[in-house]
Length: 459
Image 1 (cartoon, rainbow, N blue to C red):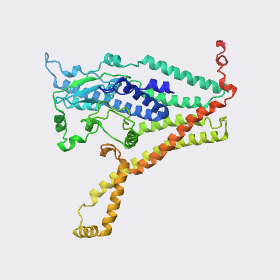
Image 2 (cartoon, helix red, strand yellow):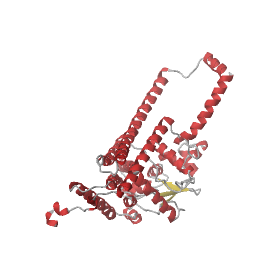
Image 3 (cartoon, rainbow, N blue to C red):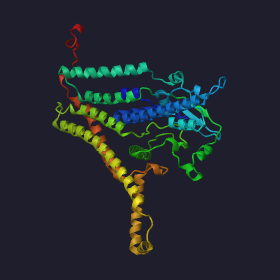
């Protein structure tokens, strides 16, 4: 499982000042995450795929519009060649390369930071830069994992699945470790499919230089001086940054690990690299796709419902862990649907209030409220609730810089952390049970599949 997780990884571009040991440690950490929580890696891959597909659509639609305007203008013969002719249709490989930090912007005042595909599209449409030309050979030269290597990995994975199916057909003992590996392979195969066009182990980015200051870009975007320091990763966060409830919960969890002295990201402002752990927003269809894939992976554990465990207690714990994984998965889906419904109700309620009520309050109402605030009991109660609210704010938003976009309501944070505890406990027991079972295996566990029973000519 570790080798499979290691081989399918497609991490973002490393920072310019990071050593090889830092990059290697990051890859080990992401491999561990892929082994312990493969569904999270799949969610990350799906989010990156959705983002790359949208960027390809935006760039190509913009190119078609410019070509249509060029044809309508009917330039006379001998006119200079338009710069539109130099542009090419973007592909998923180019969008992935841009979203992983393949392009870095260097402004007139010396600021340098990585760009994503949406930021490149913004700078292109605003006329700050020319659209980067798609050079497949350049990206292929930077890519360390080609199609052939990925095909070989998939063939090895497929052979393992065929072997397990062969053991099951011939009534040979299938260990829980093999079942866990099958579940992991199914999840990792989906992840590899969504990352099929993403370059891997790329270390050198393309530099885009512009003769414009960062403040000029922000001024033309309508961002005033008081709002310029509110960005988190780069000054162009206003273009592409979009947090949703799952990304907020994920950052909340990572901030807890940071307080435990686990380091994530470059840690500077602006950031030197785009983080691999960013959870991009998923649409409803994509989220249901992840839920369906996870259901298939968790269903593998139910095939050991009547498995011959060494003890009865281990069998019961395995069943409990399998049920808990499936229940936690669909509870997450329930939370998602509840949040969507609450957002729709709040929007409609606010629109109804604006149409039917005025925000003006009568002078009598203001006088009554002012008298109540002046009482001693009111001030004591208000002070108590203020202290409680400050303590809860540290839980809702535990980001080091107090980023207001990362605040998570307790009604979301509390159930998700409870679900996360049961998920981690179930995952941990399944891995422990895989090891404990090795102490007592039947003789058929060491037998090999006799393929000549399926194809007699092999014998």
